[in-house]
Image (spheres, rainbow, N blue to C red):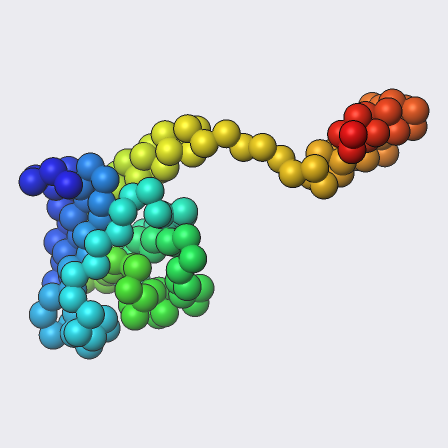
Length: 159
């Protein structure tokens, strides 16, 4: 991890630090204690983030929710995201900086997705035998392949 974060996002109840290869979520103050408890700082390697949801701040508080492979993120919107250890809350009704904070949230999302993209493209996707046969069947059903071509291709896969 580099010494200086690429992006710092500080709020009343938590701080978010995006480094080159890790995301750090750090609850703070009484609000952080009430929503996240005593869990302390959480470090998430960027390669383990499988999805990101950004809900922009407006009248309601916005949030960035990080889905981690094998994790159990909340699915109940902002009210559950408050307590989700993989979520970062920001902005809201009385915050005059919502536009800037929404931009920062989307910048974080874009940087992590770019990181994810480079990791995913490095791993070749090989469909399973069943998936390959299903694809052939779809092609046959749609008329792209004749029944004879389908059977021949299927036999070749099974041999």
